[in-house]
Amino acid sequence: MTYRALIPVKMLNEVKSRLAPYLTAQQRAELVLDMLHHVIDTLRESEALAAISVVSPDTAILQQVQRWGAHALQEEVHGHNPALTAAARRELAAGATALLTISADLPLLRAVDIQCMIEQSRQYAVVLAPARDGTGTNALLMRPPLALPYVSGPGSNTHTALDIDTIEDLTLLQRYEACLKN
Image (cartoon, rainbow, N blue to C red; front, top):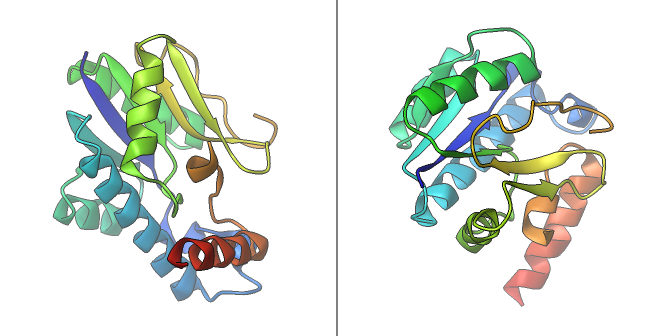
């Protein structure tokens, strides 16, 4: 089984718009880059993936992720779901027999979380990690890639449930981090 990972990332000037009342555009961009770097490092640390790719329309992001050891995939089509589908097809053509599509904004992600999802995928063709608020999916592991169509957006594991979109999410992260330090 050849597992690969795919991380979608928007244009830096569009990221985390719901945090705009609390963070400047620069702060939001830095937050996303910090979390993306963490996710890439964690995926690499899991030692379970043949490759890690980032798909984005933003060339600055793509240049940065290459320095962090990830493959850069220029977004071929506009729109989150079509871009993911096109990128997943590229991963399939590159030899993926299983594909983990994972959010870039998971500050609590650990290598063991990835290893657990992969272990679950040995029994189940599709493994999901829902978002904390129950309205989305932070990670989706499919065997084979594209076993299901990408349908994300509104209406669509503890350490993969917290992604950072709102000031409440940032506050919750601070609480988690304080608990983990003690």
